Length: 287
Image (spheres, rainbow, N blue to C red):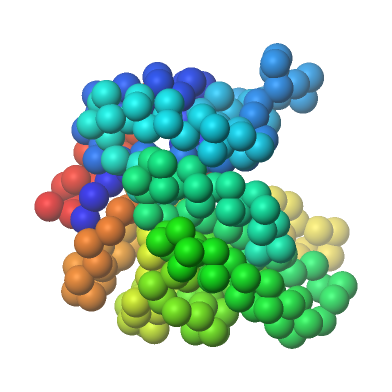
């Protein structure tokens, strides 16, 4: 298994600085955040906790990713850093933008991109949302075959595949050469926890990528009638509910040889120190 960082976790660093830092720390690859570029200046509501999404300098502009791909590839080659995924926030219906990302992936010699499934908001019947996403993804699958890339959908709280079982139900409609799943045990602390071995064995060839982050539940308040209200929050690797040793054991047992990619939203340390500790911890348990 190889180790990478999803650059949503490196918001303070520009494109080349990100690659330089990851190389210095000993990571094998980089998973690029593909989305809307950060504003020219920090937004008024900027906070340290929200910096990953509100002012992320390590983001490649989704609107022209195909045009900047060659330069990004040149920078990664300079530091001998593999590009393991182009990770977008696009939905299956965004076919024009998805194709643009696939073109960029070909230029970067990257075999994986991420596309999101719709969220589930309890206002529309789940089956209707699910079936529509499957139909839209048929077009994405054709594009994936055309460009020779794999499109991975992430197990994520709040969407229509918050568990491995739900993710398998979705992915099983497609060819695993072109459609896969990102296994994310940190997200599954929030919603969708299942035994890691059960989920990974069920996914089989649809397992395309793994995200590493941690979370736990904290007591938010106690209501007037004595009800304890708990909510999930992000946590450092060693302080949450994810059993990383069990995760790695299962991945080894099934013969997984892809990437484990750090996506750490905890805020107890600065980015550099956090990423340094993360790779030291992951190297220890993977080797």
